[in-house]
Length: 331
Image 1 (cartoon, rainbow, N blue to C red):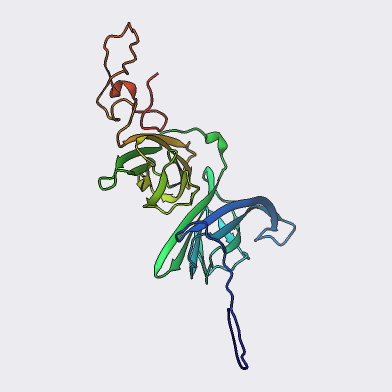
Image 2 (cartoon, one colour; image 1 turned 45 degrees about the horizontal axis):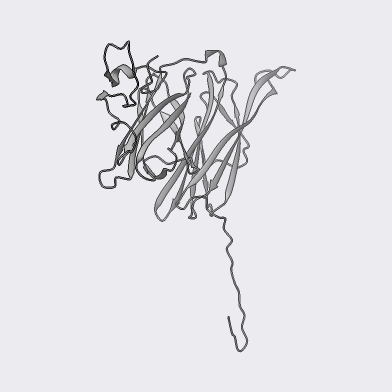
């Protein structure tokens, strides 16, 4: 309760903010290709009735502060597709404009705020197999920075589909030495070709596991699926994502990661997957811990015949080239 005596002039300032989705600083950025249309313009060197047709792509960048702190300022950089030309006007005038990218600076982004930027690009002279437009966004808070990345990729020459081998993924895991309930995962994405690629990395956590932290900014996390966007994987480069997760208890945990790569200046490639299995604590009712030692069949007292050996090694059960996965059961 408030009590006043005498003459007063009272002013109150109320700040309404959105409800954060994450209990830490976080940005969500999306890049959408709205349309590609043909535009007929007069020829530059002919004053007659000559016209030339251009392919104009319209993109929308949507930036959302879904973390728990306000950000100011916020820096936005859009990287054009190879050979594309920026067309004025855009919904927001770029602070810096070059032949390959444009920069904007947003003064602030409160919790829950959403900003959009619409741009138009002339993509008539674009020649690779995929039309790739990339964006990165970084916001500042308390002298720290939080970033987010995304891209739009449209397959132009779809007949080149189904090339395999240029991109690889490996997944490994180990139990933390200090906290036996924490599993440390490592994802290695290899670009084995002389082209620049981007990728969406999706990891399905085992049931009951909770994400703790990640070495690479996450694009989204809904409690069971973690998504990262890699904005650039250079020629013959390997990108590494390390993250940790809390296991709900002892058990054997299996999870799968999928890498969906796109090419900035090269041919189309297919998604690749890798699966990892790890034991946390003492696993009841399971066979020996996962390893590449000798495998023993469970003692179910079944009669069997026709085998040369009662022992099968891990190498006999796995293969080295399984469509992008680390291992698979032999046929």
